[in-house]
Length: 328
Ligand code: FAD
Image (cartoon, rainbow, N blue to C red; front, side, top):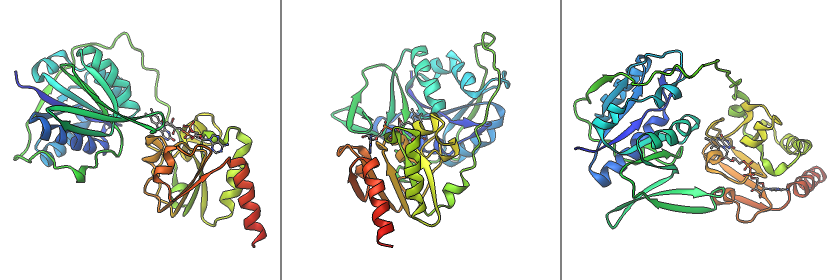
């Protein structure tokens, strides 16, 4: 039976998100190595228009899973993808985004279709007839390459790792086929209470020319004062943070930089006590000049930094501020 590469489109508020183009890029590379055809799967009539646009652009076949449970979040609907879909398409690979949504679905899907699951894939390489999937471990300090021996493999693709412009899109045919299918499970054992949306105004970060960003390395909320004082040295500056700092409610979520936060491109980004996990880096790697302060000389953030300060931030920042003030 013909095997396929299935892309499960990332969807928010009924719209297919731009990261889906990165999934197409990753799938194209897999197709290049394996010769398998790609099928894009999405759910709900809301996303049908977007799905058609993708189908036209890339010549992909698209399967739309009918939305018989519009009240449920998309994660739940995608978890109830019908068995017939997988029986018909016989996937060798299923590709999702390495996002909150993708991670919610991928492991459960792997169990459902008896596949292996490799998360956070940053590179796909082909050697001696095998396909290797590369991912970072321990805050990007170790690079691991995995070869899947399973019949099918579910992959989550790290944000920013596969830029659409760097990979050949599947050859556009006139347009792909669009087909519809019903989900085969009811979700009655699940009660959806509601959504809570975080305030998303990242305007100040987008306007700032200098961003001073606090990571877990600040250790105590009081040390945010140091970050603010450092920011005050620069006009048009703003304070931001990594996710753990926002999770602790030391900063609002609209200050979080990274894949689930803001993407920023300031002239100067000062990362204070930030390890450099890929989820953070994808939100700030396009800053024009990056300075990182970290006690660990092997911290991954130094790999993308223009200036690396190996020092305790509680010693370095006060010293730097005093020196600036003394020199006028
Ligand atoms: P840590 O990784 O704990 O690093 C702290 C660093 O501080 C270390 O390198 C340490 O050496 C250094 N340090 C300690 N003490 C000092 C000191 N006194 N002086 C100087 N340096 C010191 N993270 C984000 O930031 N943004 C996101 O949008 C985001 N989205 C995510 C989405 C998903 C789906 C997942 C799974 C994760 C996401 N994360 C995100 C979390 C991410 O994986 C990391 O856990 C997080 O970025 C780590 O934050 P950190 O670097 O501040 O903390």
